Structures are given as structure tokens and as C-alpha cells.
Amino acid sequence: MPRQRSIPTTLALASLTLLATACAEDPFPSDAELQQLLDATRLTSSAPLDATNAHQNDPLAIELGTKLFHDKGLSSCGTISCESCHGGMGLTVDTPLAKGCGGDTAHNPPSLWNVAWLDEFMWDGRADRLWNQAVLPMTNPVEMAATPATVRTLLTTSYAADYQKVFGEPVSATADERILANVSKAIAAYENTLRSPNPRFDEDVARFAAAVKAGTEPQDPSFLGFKVLVRRGACLTCHKGPRLSDSGFHNVGVSDLNAGAAGALLGIDATYDWPYSSRGPHSDDPEGAAANRLLTLRLEIQQRPANFLGARRTPSLRAIGLTAPYMHTGALAKLEDVVDFYSRGGDKEGTFLGAKSVTIVPLNLSNEEKAALLEVLKSM
Ligand code: HEC
Ligand code: HEC
Image 1 (tube, helix red, strand yellow):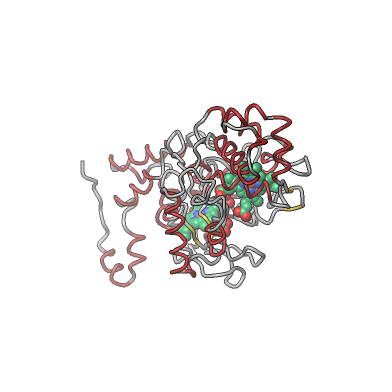
Image 2 (spheres, rainbow, N blue to C red):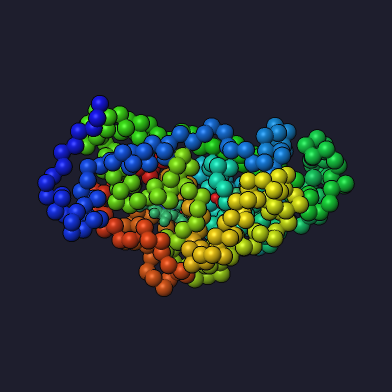
């Protein structure tokens, strides 16, 4: 049955004067807007295949990776595991920064829920595969401060047989760089299994779509929240698809003038000649899709550096209610603060590097709209 719409006649006049206003007056949702909502549901039950990690789906690698992820022996100080900063219900910490072997981290640890569905990792994208990401915290002096010797000792004392079964050679025969790469591949095999349960959001969208078909959507409890999410806030332009992230890079204007404030502009460049990158000697598919993606991304940065200055990888919004505080700085304590942040159009110019994305403008949401958007975020 075609959808019936009654369009106020004043609309035609309004559209002549102000296109944006006219859009805001169109009945919600348009076909395209409904499609955006539908596209944002139904995350696949298993993570996409990463050809650069040949051990991704090996049950023995998953088992070894699970143990290593939780083992404090992977840090030089002996008190920090991956779980120390990526634990609990949110697979993160509840403070803006996390404590490692050498003090506070520079940024807020992202949640690891559904992380294997993303294409780039870290706020600035400086890891281009899930497995090579793990090399960074292991060797970062602030986080786990491990050296290949630390890792070798742990493997020899606790996991010698497991390691040999997965990688087909003894620890002693593996070169230093390779040891870090292998351990990382096992850990990534475990991270691959971290999928959050299907959220209420998926059901709400399905019900809303049925209401649209029946022409009763204005009465649906999600109507206002979805309208703010899709139209007023344009949130799904970046937090899109089943991952609720485009895995792309955008500057939304989060205050930060510290080291690393340049964001993706410098992050991705660092990956290019890194021995652990998707195109490096430890990749199991150095000329495949991931390597091509890295080359394309780097070219894009060289051609349009301004788009990447102060930009960060769009985080997924799945399970977002469990992962406070928010943003790469962890400066926003609650989801309410995130809603206020977008409502005022981000932080003040001059408190961050680069220019905000054109979609980040003051939305001036009413209290009712804020509450409705908050409900939607919590349902994710
Ligand atoms: C001391 C705290 C700490 C420890 C220990 C730690 N991490 Fe993290 N993790 C962070 C922080 C902080 C970030 C964000 C860093 C950035 O982007 O600047 C991060 C980012 C990540 C990301 C990227 C997520 C995304 O959405 O891009 C993954 C994956 C990850 N860590 C996995 C691990 C694994 C695996 C280990 C163990 C080998 C580990 N972490 C150990 C703090 C920690
Ligand atoms: C231009 C792309 C873009 C748009 C539009 C956008 N976001 Fe974001 N969002 C991002 C990026 C990039 C970050 C990370 C920013 C940072 O930490 O510097 C982010 C961060 C967030 C976070 C914090 C996630 C976390 O794990 O810390 C939430 C929640 C969020 N956005 C919700 C929204 C909502 C709600 C809207 C609509 C009102 C919206 N976003 C619109 C790109 C976007």
C-alpha cells in the first residue's frame, strides 16, 4: 500500500525561502530516511573475515588469545592485562583515562564490543587491522610496556604447547617481531568473538517500519527519537549501517590541544610503513583488500589533509549505554552530556585543531527532543 501523506500547503512557500526548513517540515520519515534506519540494524552474527590474520577463526587461537587477553604477565610491570583497560560490562573503564604500567593513558579506551566489525582502529586510525592494533598497547611504555623478551618469557613458561599448536613452530624459533605479530593474531581471534547482544533498537526500528507501512508512525513511541537521530541530528550520516559507524574519519569538534590533537592526519600516516601493517611482512594477505584500503586512505589524506586534521574514527554506538565516559578524551561523563554536546554544535572553535565537519552545527534541541534522542541511544 502506498504511503499517504498530507503536505501542508504552506510548505511550498517555506521551501522557496529556506531549503533546510522545508526539509524539516517534510513528513518523517522519507523513504531514504526509513532506509537509513533499517540499514542501521542487524549486525552480522560473526565478524567479517580478515584475510591478513590467517588464525582469525582457529578455535585454538581463540582459546590462546582469550588467556593472553586476561594475562597480566603480558605486561612488563606484571600488573596490567588487556582486560585492565577493557573489562566489565562495557569492555572499557569508567574513568576518562586508564592506568597502565607507566601512568595514565593519553585517551579514553574505546569499548571492545563489536570491534572486529570495524575497518580502522584507535581514535586516529593508526592501526589498520584488529590484530596489529594489539602490538600498540603491548609495547606502549604507558600501557603494558612489554618487549619481545617479556612476551617470549610468558609464552615459554605458560603457553609453549598452545603456541606451537597454533603457529606450527616453537617459541624459541620465532623471531622477535614475529612473536608480537603472532600473539596479536591470537588475541584478535578472541576479540573477534566480542559481539554485543542484539539491541532493542533493532526491534524498535522493525516496529517503526511496520507503523510507517500502516501510516501510523506519528503515534509510534520511537517517532521523535528517530526523527532527531536521522533528520535533526543527522547522526546516521556518520554512525551508519549495522555497525552504527562508517569507520570513517570526522572532526566533530571535541576540545583537545594535547599531543595527538592532529588526529587521523598523522595517525594513518604512521601505519603506512609500519612492519605490522596490513601490507607489511607479518600480514597474511599483504596485497589484498586491507592493504588496498590503506593505500587509498593514505592517498586521500595526501589530497585532502584538512579533512583529516583533528578527525577521529567514528566510534560504533552499539552498546553505547555501557561505555561512559565518552569521546576520545573521555571528557563527556554521561550520554546526556553527549546529547548536549551535539545540540550546541560541538565545542568552541579554537579549542581543537582543524575544522568541524559541515554536519556538526548547533541543533538547539528542545528538552523533549533531547530526552527522545537519549532513549534511542540507550536502546542501542
Ligand atoms: C592501560 C590501558 C590499556 C591497556 C592495558 C590496553 N588498552 Fe586497548 N586501548 C586503550 C586506549 C587508551 C585506547 C585508545 C588509544 C588511542 O586511540 O589513542 C585503546 C584502544 C584499543 C583498541 C581500539 C578500539 C577501537 O575502537 O579503535 C583495541 C582493539 C584495543 N585497545 C585492544 C587492546 C588489547 C588487545 C590490549 C592488550 C594487548 C589492550 N587494548 C590493552 C587502553 C588500553
Ligand atoms: C560528522 C560525523 C558525525 C556525526 C554527524 C555525528 N557523530 Fe557522533 N561521533 C563522531 C566521531 C568522529 C566521534 C568521536 C569524536 C571524538 O572523540 O573526538 C563521535 C562520538 C560520538 C559518541 C561517543 C562515542 C564514544 O564511544 O565515546 C556518541 C555517543 C555519539 N557520537 C553520538 C552521536 C549522535 C547522537 C549524533 C547526532 C546528534 C552524532 N553522534 C553525530 C562522528 C559523528
